[in-house]
Length: 291
Image 1 (tube, rainbow, N blue to C red):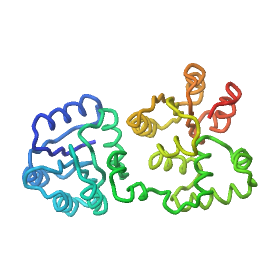
Image 2: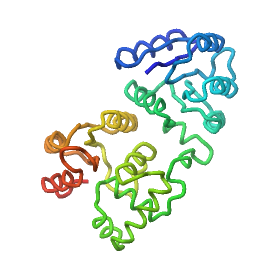
Image 3: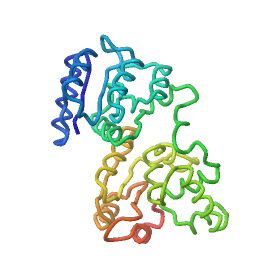
Image 4: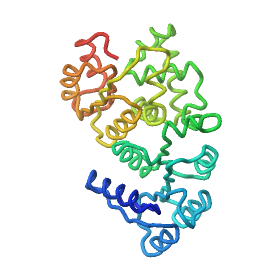
């Protein structure tokens, strides 16, 4: 992943670039000290996977600058970086197509997660910025149009419940659960159950984990054969204060479950080698209270 990193504070820029290239072998950084240098770099080389612009950089307007870069490279995600960005600016930047807002106090693992997320075309907005946005910018997620019952079904799906179990817990029929889930999948743009869980994880994980007044959760085990997905989820949750472990296959996940006894387990339903539902059933055999 090639990143153009622009910030007029040399120490900050060099520290971030140094950390990224040391922490991930697939990341390389090209640096710029002001917006004019950004223009010059892009004239010579426009093959970047992600462009990060300090929103207070000399020569750049916080809204017009990213617009100019996107006009030149419409397919390249452009993110804003800031030590302190007011909510009005953040909202307008996101509405105009910014890939995200990166706060300079972000932890290293969370920063890596945010960059990978944005490079794939997703939007990254840290909780502190979301909470400050008028009307809470979280309303931009895929959960906007879900009915309360559809949201209930998705939340239980993320927790690993089968349709029959969701029906029992919500006191509705299994057929009704299927109808709610199918409707929710269409609204979320999900092609199947696994895809819906991924979307929910990436766009609304914190709310799902803490919703409905359930017991507080501190530790999470993610079992998924997709290392990028595991890294993204791990970074998001760790940035929100959770302790997260990841396993790349069902058997490793079951072993870690027995050793860690986590508060929540997230299982990929379509993992090769052992189907997700079978993995969930085995975990529940070991601990009937597992979530």
